[in-house]
Length: 324
Image 1 (cartoon, rainbow, N blue to C red):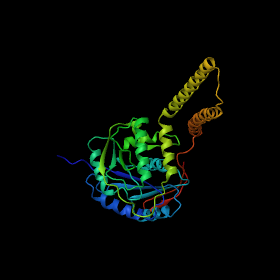
Image 2 (tube, rainbow, N blue to C red):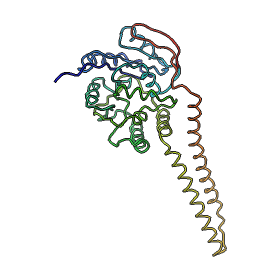
Image 3 (cartoon, rainbow, N blue to C red):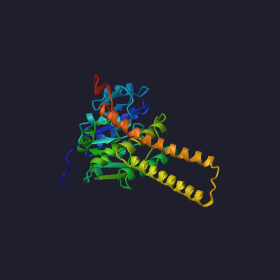
């Protein structure tokens, strides 16, 4: 049986707060990708520095200055992990694109497993972790997000949406057709293909430093998924309004019956205030959901950029320019 020809692999890595991990990450990637049967040294590593406050960009420049296969993109403003991936996708030239975190919790040694599964004919392959070395709130939040994604985007129940994934280049090109400012890569993937598989891998402790991905960013990512790829929040708000209105009419009817039958009306100020607060809360909730959608529409119409590039560096040769 004839061996398949070597493919070019692009590894896209958003980098934030990772000055202590990047050198070791590149070392491990070089060892694995130089020996991987389907890669055979034909690869590129693209770091996207998401305006990190530490020396992450300086480390990327140092790595690129001594390695032809390492390049870097510096975003002028923090854009978020998924927007940073779009910047990397736009510059990836490989037949296959692998995305992974910058903290070595995703092992480069597992990349060949993703490629082998991709060779079975799938468009996208996700890594499914046997264990999760994250804080309890992150694990719980991930499970909640997984369930919501299954409901909003019809995600298969056995598919775990992890940031460690391999995509064929046509899927990346399809993803790049999305021009809105609120990027959720997994939602875009599910919009373009259902030919998706997963492989089981280990999840490791962070190599060095502490994670900068906090609760606020997790909530922001969840809102992107909920409001960018589904009208369900609007429909749920409408349903809630119908339910509360129905309860209001029911209580009004009961009060009329009580007045006609026993001619006694209770003092009921507490219940009245509760009713006003509940109805007012529902109205504010509805306005909030509508405002979230309208705000996103406004920013999309105004062509808010997904990211703004301040500087780029290619392997062994640095260039600087501005780009949107």
